Length: 553
Image (tube, rainbow, N blue to C red; front, top):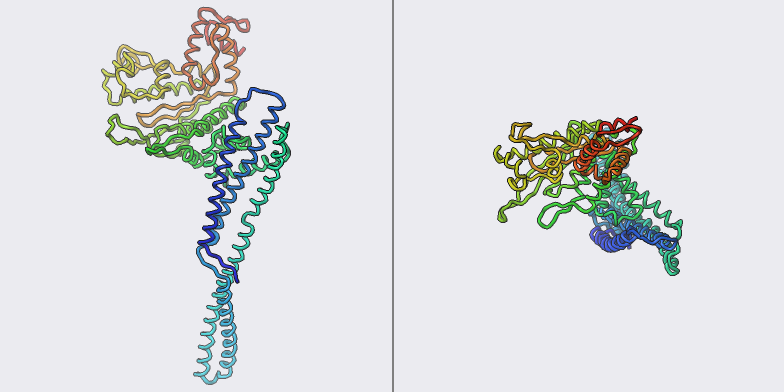
């Protein structure tokens, strides 16, 4: 009996295999997650026994990770086979029978063509007979061509059966080989487990497995120089606590790519997969989104401090716009990041509920765009102050009259105008350190608002400012402070001064994330210097300017 290819049955078989493999894969992921959380826990105990225990857990993590890779490979093979079989039912016996018939037709036609051509020559002088012979040659030639086409098609069907048979035989050979290796590793783990934790160092097979996993994940990250969407999707569903050591290594490369090489198309893939839709239709960030923002900021801050040269504005703007796009808690539809006129733009659809319980939710568009990052820290801070004030003015102008604005400035925003919604950073920062209340709207600037900004801190600590400016009158003014290669030394120096006066030192992350708070501390330090000068390098420093000059001597 010949071979038969039934596409429907083969697809059913592939789907059954996928279903089983996906079930096992889910179990592997749960096991890996449990192990990873355990190995990531801070263990206070020390010693060889603890090291051996952790090494053994890492071995189990690697085995689970390899199981997941094998399962994903098998699922991919099943999908490819389902596509490869096509939709045609193929019966080898029937095809061979049809092939035999067509070959016989071709043989008869070839013989007739030869015979009629010979007769055509013989009857050359008898026109009617010669013409009849010519017509017979043409008719048999056409029939022979049809037979040739049919034979080619039937041979291709046989070839397809051969290919499917070969692919079926080879379908899971690679996975079987990997599973065989995994069984050996499991056997070694089983033996070691009976005697307690025995791996003082990672065994050679575990090191080789980790290297292979690292290579697979790294190669899967990019496709033609751009982020692979399957890779992004995988890591968007992993928290750092659930990552194995190999995945953490790849995650670091992933973060590097986003900061230094990503294009808008790459960033949009990231934004797409780091949100999930809730039951009421609103999008919310996955925990991995917050972790990615933290990882991006930590990586870029270290890079800024370690780089001997100024870090390019494009990199800082890229980090800023990604931070914005990954932390929109009011997103209804994920928007797009674009690069226009040298700056990034992020536009998405907002979703907010009306104050009336019976009203439908309101949707609106919000757009953020980055501003050029000045290489001079003070200029960056001045720009930040200017944008903060202009942004606050837009909020105050909206649906308010001047009298209400003056009242608001006198008694506080929360009491007089609860409908004025200002982002937390703007509320805590602008109102605390960037505004001075005037007696009337025209006494200083518009609405009596002046801006001191964060220029003192930015100049002294050598911090650069990157901003994503809202194009609408709603939302929040987003800004990030980035260090330079001088920042760490400057922070350490000024912290010694703070300690001298019995003041709590400033942590670098506090200076970056809460610049107004740090600037306020510097202002108070300046008052202390005025009362009791600080001696440094034989200089008596009565203010921050004197201290800065002494620092550079």
